[in-house]
Image (tube, rainbow, N blue to C red; front, side):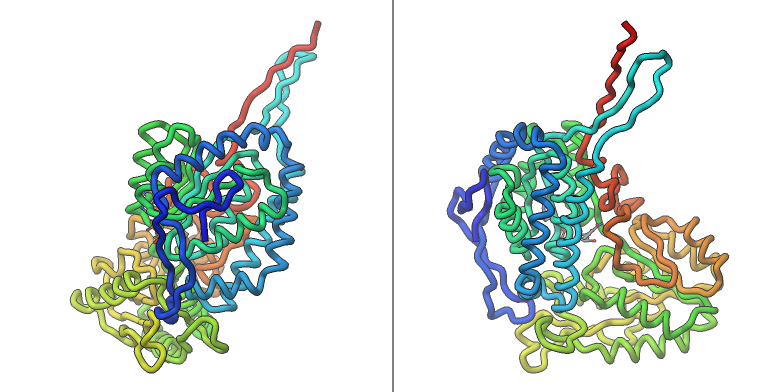
Length: 482
Ligand code: NAD
């Protein structure tokens, strides 16, 4: 595989490469990629800059047609892309199919939205005067994405960036860069002019650092960890470039005493162990009213133990492997730390090594009980299949526990009490609230983003409003009174 710069498929300037391996079977090399550095990123930025004026001049409807065509091309490849996604990132085939379909739909959505992009007319104080706004592209924008939704996240940044008339340089995460290159292939075939989209695969610090520091990059949208996002944000702030940083969470699901327990358990299992817990919106804290703790835990542990863990391409598998050895090691270390702090291991907690599973990065779905607010497992994102269960005496305490962290991405509540559900939706410090639903899963047509340390909270992603980050408003005054 190669980079995509200025409409050409090229190796890294150093000629260096790296390989990805199948997380379900580390013996299998999935692909070899360029290990790009600062010079490659700089070349991509130059190519984007050169292509930008013509792309901006095409108009949004012309740009939207290319996005719609790309959507169709992606859809025609859905099954092959889903299989490749599972091979590289590890999630189950059903999860990959859903994610590829999401990318298809995102391009279709922004293709259609191209007909609606425009500004506002505003009444002027005087007659025969026209006062209106237009939205203009920023110029060259950079995108830095994580590995956990390797096609959906690049799609939900690339599509609004392009339809708004920007030229793009994207750096996908190294554990799973293949899907971003697949998007570039589809857009190239759909007729995207050379240089309008550039993909640079390689070292986070070198490539990402250049994207953040280069003065030709007018804005940067980042999704990833808080540690990296914070660093990139400081670089952007120094030159006052536009920034959108979407980062991690520690998402709570509250289960109130009146909840349907089977529903609550099934929601928590899907939101905590689906995608191997590797979703920014995954439930990682379960806050349960003490009165129902016993029966809730019994059902939760039984369901967690029954989950079929294995290679995502195998039929019937419900949970795939961790993406990398580092991620698996981090998950296991978090469980060990929680136990040392006094949490009780109710199920799971170990690597799975029986038979062929030993070649992959598999871990048991894990439930920790007796977790209290000061433990690391109640405060720090793990990004793995680990649920921390905490007890609360009533709604107010549950809410206080839910809000007692420095991040706020997604939050869920399971209850039949409409009043408490509505109070929760008002008072929870989170960007997304779900009532009787899993904390994961988003509508592509609705705004998405976090609060507190989960986000710079400057602009929302997804939905029609996603174009706001990628455009600036110009105000025009026309006097035709004489
Ligand atoms: P990460 O922060 O390690 O990497 C994200 C991206 O930044 C990668 O492309 C990486 O190569 C790049 N990078 C690394 N160092 C860099 C540097 N110094 N300068 C510039 N770029 C650099 O995150 P990850 O492990 O890929 O993803 C997991 C994290 O992403 C989790 O914290 C998760 O919660 C978060 N996430 C958030 C959302 C959201 O929408 N809020 C969605 C998905 C994932």
